[in-house]
Length: 435
Image 1 (cartoon, rainbow, N blue to C red):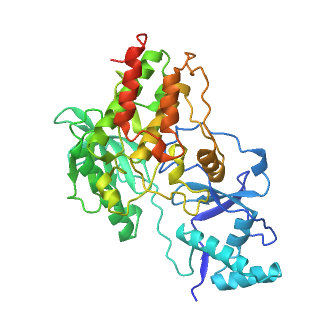
Image 2 (cartoon, rainbow, N blue to C red):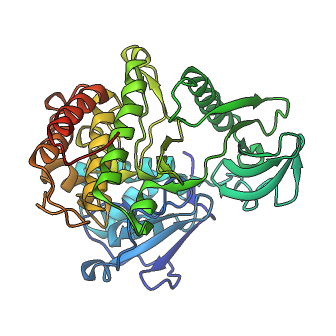
Image 3 (spheres, rainbow, N blue to C red):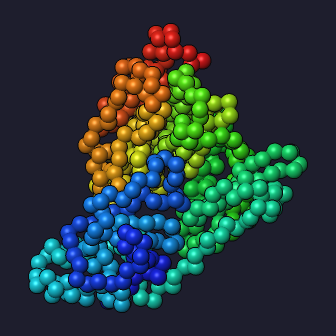
């Protein structure tokens, strides 16, 4: 049987950051939870960083994934299980060791170990004994001042796990563009590269299909000439994410907020009328420009309704604070249980409106289980006053409540229905101007 070991790319530290080694005398009964600390694949401006709750300071550890720049919160049980593979062993050997130590060989132990083992292998925390560790590529392919096909790199906007985003200057046309590039050197696995390439192709295709929607970021070209590093050229939009806009704008008013809500609803209404689903709506994918216009970005997860009905496999994603209850599980072994649809878009639009009203998201949690439990079972609070201290209209609260209904079929059917409801009430309230 194949023997497995701990990947060299993972480091276990205490909650104080000190590296800790194997300790085979620690156990508990809880599972592994992924902490919301992924700076590569998710936004870092949606939630304020919080102190570690006191109940996690003892009996818990941080498992750091160097390749993905991800942190996992693990407890004694998972550390105990991982430590078993500090030297190469088969799963059967580890199960036998544990059965001997707990003086039991019941079926539950083997099932639990198999459960952990499969998850840890999937995450490549445990790898085959002779597994060749992929080289970690930390630097972006291009740096400030470099050129790519006549465009000069002004700034590395984002250096993600497989993709890189640059701000570039076109001297010929005297304007800036954004380049989204897939860096092949960041993965040695052709299957992963091909999947990422399909996602880039999907994003380009969908952006072409919505070029008539002015509030959605424009795409200009797809360069596949560089087989190792294909890229798309996108519109450069100068502005702030919705979250940052709400946080930093000093002269923000109720009128501006309501106008932004209307613009967001109009944009997604046009998208839904084309039978397109964004699939990953959150505050960092909504940009507010210098003239307070709304721009939607990051269409990489956009889906077609008809494709979902054909059960096409898709890549799931989404900042977890905005995930609707029907799409999540309480365990991190498989966080997402359902592909996005119109109902999940409606839910996430409701979350945006909630954010615009209260400048915060309604559900909290330090670990996935807590956050998921709150999303699935807790009803959001709706204070009478907004963060700007205006009285929130009851009709607007009712709109958000319907968007955030736990049962998807109790929500609005699409963004157009929300927009019509919103405009009907705004028309009746003559003290609100959103034109």
